[in-house]
Length: 405
View 1 (cartoon, rainbow, N blue to C red):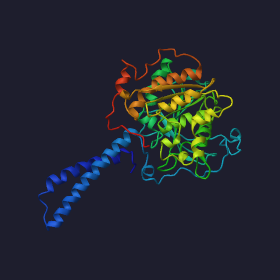
View 2 (cartoon, one colour):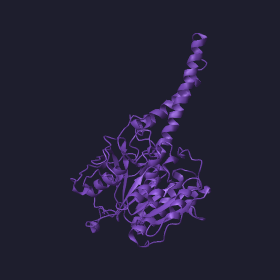
View 3 (tube, one colour):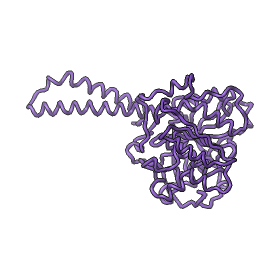
């Protein structure tokens, strides 16, 4: 039975109801020796506790897309088939453009909250990672008027723990952006959300670590090749960007800064620079790994500043200082926008990030196309008088998730 499926949720609801009713009818009717009656009552209480906790967990998990399946939850899932030493550029000397085209079969995704999202299981030829990738195509994609047009792409990266479908299921990115695309406020992006949590109970930090994982190559080489082979996607780097929240925000900024030949821009919502912020990050295990996967040191190490644009939003003590650090060392043509989010807007959770989506994707459109929006720019979600500010103000929702540090 699927962890996130409706049958398991309904079964848990029924069991929780039974667990509540049982003591009401049986508590004083139990027969037998004293110890047996007491043991039966304890078992009823434990049954009620377990079913209640399970139900609450399922509701939170389904609301935030933290764990996709039992393997993710129990720590038995592993999507890494091999992890060869691929060298500094992450290709292992392989001419990626010379590889045969990747032909994938896509099926409608379940549990993402809306139709139009499709999913495929991709075997990364270079990275050695085998995992799912979700794709959503903009309204214009199937329009006959655009049959010869290629579309820009944004890779959406989830936090840790987190599911690849969280951007669609919890943040509703496609539902928020579709009307803005039709109005010309946001470019018609192809939205691609690959699995980032490829090792159970471990954050890869989107790093390449020989013998362990090649997460960077999976995200920056295998996934983009699959997308360009199967869809009318613009070529890198001008047509590609990354976006992430929390640990995914760290990855988004790191990938864009480390690979300006593969990405033109990045959005980081409550992200960070130093991988040690996430205590379960593989990239935090040594000083060398921390430095090699810290976008601050990567950017600082360039003799010629890369042409890349970064949008970094965060709160005091939760991402804003990292954003300021990157902004302080950025030199043209590098663009870094550090945005402070007030504490009143909410905590480190989906309710803080979701309202920012229309604004940040409008910014991304302007950065990647060099053109102003054809309609008024959405108001910043934390601005006074903004309706989105009301959405961002909730902090006590049962769906709120705080990043582990």
